[in-house]
Picture 1 (cartoon, one colour):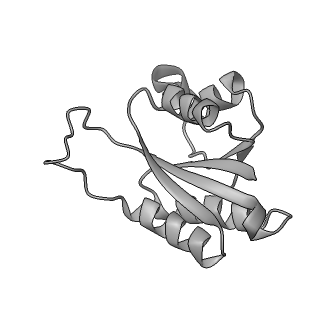
Picture 2 (cartoon, one colour; picture 1 turned 120 degrees about the vertical axis):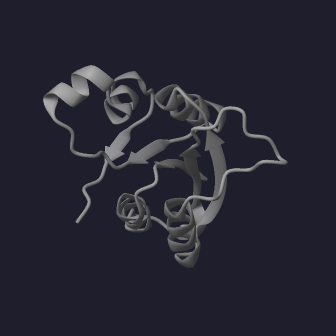
Picture 3 (cartoon, helix red, strand yellow; picture 1 turned 60 degrees about the vertical axis):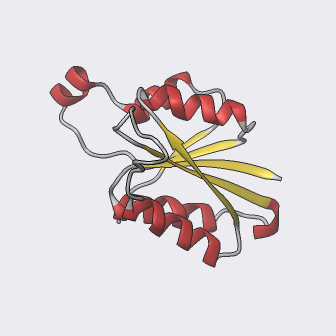
Length: 132
């Protein structure tokens, strides 16, 4: 089984682009398993006080399931890049499919880039898809 991690943020268009890319990969849907991961900001979240599910997560999961793929959902916490990489290692992922966002050079320098960190520190192939 080919295992793909799809980390999504709260942008529905980026999540849809990531899911679309995964469904267009070669191979049969029965040969692919996808883990959709979302980072939550509240590190004090409990089962009694859950975060609302992100519309982007809902969109990605529905798109992938409609294509016949096996889909699992996971939560990530800060720092996000480390969470993505740990998840990829934990589930022995074969690939990560991300969607970057446009940032100014100053924004990248001041705040870093999750996508950049995952690309540089990852041990599996990382695909960055464009939003149409």
